[in-house]
Image (cartoon, rainbow over all chains, first blue to last red; front, side):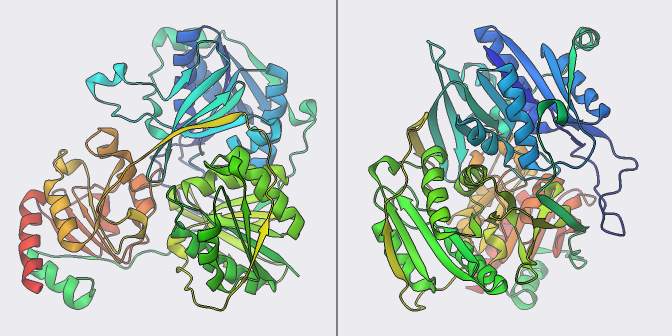
Length: 265
Length: 321
């Protein structure tokens, strides 16, 4: 099986994000960058599927040369090779899906696995756009049912199961009020939710090996995609701060506040 | 005249999903600001009953499309049906509540129409052709005003930011249409509903949530929730540890809630969690660690052990009755 996974570069989810005073963007100084956590789960899932069914994991990222860091991270985890779409200007979800469509047409994977959303723009659109552009089936929010930390985890039914004839996948999806299972003919697009798996750490030998793995460079022009954004971010602002709260000493005073002041009980 | 098309959602039992009413209210606001009219769409195997319920919300028309192929929701079969209807109506805006289904379906509809899309819209600004949308980024740490420049614009609407539309506003015309049906490469296998006697998290007036501090013991959390007729929530850490089911998770990647009262017990307040509950009207935090970030958003904080406080709280609340 050939599995294409994405590795977007995003701010470390633990960073404190501050908006620039003029609202033109966020303050970049002092920020650390990582692979989008949902994409990292996608890389892990790709590696697990390939370990079971043979094949290769190809990782793709779109951005300036700094995104090679995220590609190398995925390669160090065990991905086999990487595709870097060199693009430094702004790009929106339509543009990203358009670029990925061309990469998919070039690579012809059996499965594309992407994070369900990236933790910077929180849009949750690219996988669905891509599936529609390709005319493929989609299974979003793939999630395992049970605990990630439990001992039994290894014995649990995985969320993405490839059929014996390798022509389809069954995917467990986490939706409101329950779990939906769908079966997609391959090739298909799957987007990952948080509990799908626990990504592995890149080992030292993995990191060493990643240095010699190939990264192919492409560009929107080479792929023939116009990436002029149709989603324009006009202004960013900080959410209105909540008014300073108070500490209460004991339960009776808490209940009194809730009853008389907030009037919620 | 700009056309705003709101897509309604049915629950597996055929009833209307409540968040649809919030989306209708957002749609109405958008139609007013754009100087246009509101339409509602509903598709499924047997949507007549839910379609009928949608009559009283002041839409120009309710479009109900029935087809046996649409028995189980799938983005692949619903998207062509909705996109074709939107094209026929010449819809300028297509919106739906930011539910799991809305987030799965609308980007596929947008892809079909090569339309730009905004997810989790919290506010609609401007008027006429100059409409912009406010939506959260970076787990709600940034609010962004975005403009969509494609002819058709697609939105999912965050239910907690718009009041639920009230019925009884005249009778909209209910128009039956034949939804476009396409062969699908995906098929429905099954749906396992997580049933609970408690109110649904996103719709509850009061939410009692537990975090790592519970060490997995939710008895007091559940007891307090039941005393208050509240929903039970949890932080991601607790769900990841397998202590409670995943669908209780409140946060950026879980559910976004905005109840009148949110009680966070043993929750430290990671960015992830705050993103899901910061809009609650009144927030109470109970945590042993005085430095826990949850106290920065709490209206009332108590530095204490939840196992000591919650029973006391239940006893004290009982006195009010």
